Image (tube, rainbow, N blue to C red; front, side, top):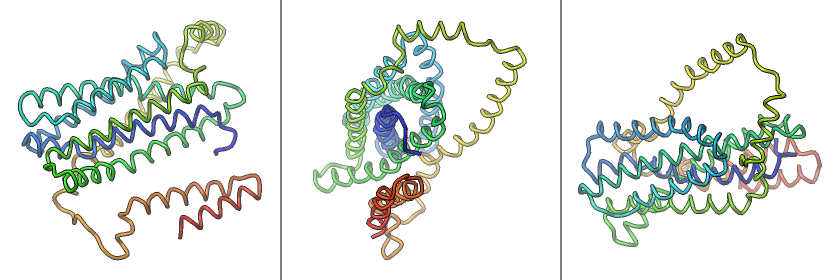
Length: 320
């Protein structure tokens, strides 16, 4: 899975991991922040949350149109800067008045717009890395690696939000309401890291950013490509709509993690655990599990005995 992949894959995956870390840090506490800071009802907080997510998933459509005209790289850059500005607005301790509420809505608008420019176009760039014949056969495994990286960022986000809030309350003496802003500040830092990774590693994927030269080359290729028949076009649209019908319900269920499941965890579950079972709630144990999973992949897929031995040692250390 990992062998023979272009370097640009890992650079883009890490950049997206930082962005997703910030995004899920924000989502992990957002409805709780709305209730605690503004005194909103669970229903109203849920309405704001769901409207925000609707924009997050709709605006990549606009982002794709703009990327076709201006290039993927430019949209990714503008998008991540916009998200950073939005998280900064959430991180500012403005209280709970009209100004604070207006800044919160402005932050959501900017973050959703930035996500629309960033997320889909970064994934297109990953796909474009595999247009080269020598990488074409590795496209599916590449997206598996890419999405594993995203999930790693999402895994640590809720813990980071809680830990920074606890630190702010216990060490800095801030109130519970103000501690939420520290968690949003973590999202700001993660985007700075994401931007740094993107630009430091840019040479490994710059050829898929969608420059003017590549656009002209793409036009030549498009002319030479065989045009789809009306029947083929119809079949592809039908297949796409069937996929929509499936994933709509998946994402409806998935994003209850930031709403219904957050309410349930806050109101109906124990906040601490002791004994052997408490090991499963320690984030560092989850890190060890990640090393074990990747080590097992490497153990069975490595071509050399040296790599297999290293993989085995990593697995044993993680288990210990």
